[in-house]
Image 1 (cartoon, rainbow, N blue to C red):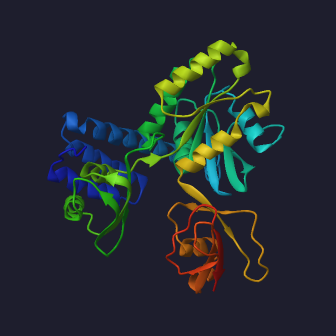
Image 2: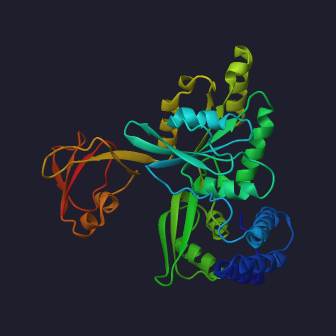
Image 3: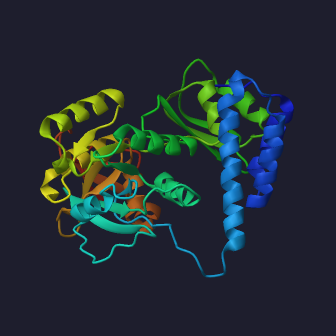
Length: 380
């Protein structure tokens, strides 16, 4: 979607990227929007910028009203391997779902701030976060910041109410904050740097490296690392200049299903699966075993493109039961860095045990690409 922006607009976007404070960014966004011409090719961009301006105005207003030290803390520091955030409306049954997933039996789980808990499955630690209910107003901005920081989402839907209205509202809210739950053909991240020119990691389609460099220079981006998952067009690169979409794998969980007729529930599930390309699961609030946790976490694990590798102690020969969770395509040195900085800095070589190898163990270097189920012993 290149918006065919005039040079003036592209120049003003640089001021947006260079803004240091919310006030500076607000003014820069307003100036940028005024320079964007109104036509069909810019409709989506103008809508996104308008939403950013509205969000910044709310943020600035909230800061003025807050007293020092007051207010709820919404940020949840990640623990474990994968963070799942549950979103839903008041009375959606998400807190009952949270209790069943984590076993957290607090007498009064706060409805004003997020509450984390841990779900362990096949050695993988999932941090599940129950959130305050989605309400109209500024609180949704904080919830969506949680969603953007999460690895994946669970959308809790009350089937006794209008299911499609709930889903439509949630998905539009996410879309408006540049969060997508459907896997895009390409995911692009642009990391600006002080020097080094333009480096592209990943595949392009119908475009060359020089095309990308020329495009980014039009926005005064001369030094950056462009990371691509999938195959990106020049349109995808330009879209990422304005803030890349964050892909969050998601599952829909229909709660309170015991309140519906069995045939009506089956029909609803089939219609939902046909309408939206997301897994749909059923959950009875009074029965924790009603949810197929295996299917939920396996889907999320696959969609995040993760694998599990196991470390072996070079002194005792014992293999750790808890795996190291890494992105598919990760190398030996990535595991060393994740385990401890000393292993990364003083790395010599590693031994790998795997049925896919001609012989095990096999001595490998830092660039060896790992696969699911590999056992790794690092020597430093």
